[in-house]
Image (cartoon, one colour):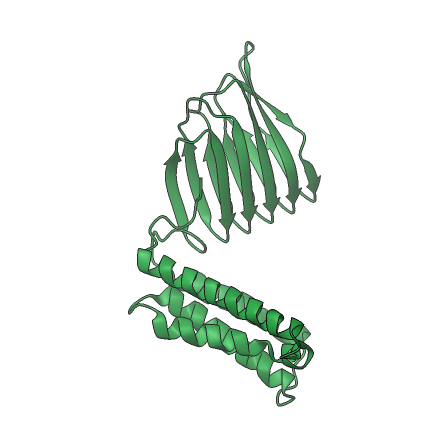
Length: 237
């Protein structure tokens, strides 16, 4: 399952695909010309922020009217690329130790500007899943996912600076393995009452809180593998 923004319009997806493809084509062409000794990338690479400026300007120009998220991303790319370019040219003297909070400010603006109920990054997704294998990715977003598969086998959950609620109480399985990667995020997991939990995931300043009280005759098992870094997992029935 791909948990990207389920409300994204085809036009936005097509624009993103176009710019990603164009970036790859330009990068590949530049390396090819360097291999053929037509260009010397060592002289050009220091001016890579020009690419950020171009991408930011392109996203601003192609953003649909009222698409604040696209306009903000374009503006951030354009602004950050311009700062980096001015620094490369020696016209602006800046130290990242002084200016790194701009990243947090930009993220905060994007979060505040998103549409209510908007999914994907900086938004929220609420949906049911019927697949045997789960593939859930949440980055700077909220996810509420209910697994309804009758033959669930497990899958993977990746959460970075996000909040994820995964409900397996209606899933059908005897033994499932969930591979988790939780980085500065929270995962709340709900299991059926006849399922016991087995944790083999490693943790670095993280914690798995097991609040389950499985039935004495619990016949099912869920194994948690993977890693937690500054994150937390809460499991309950």
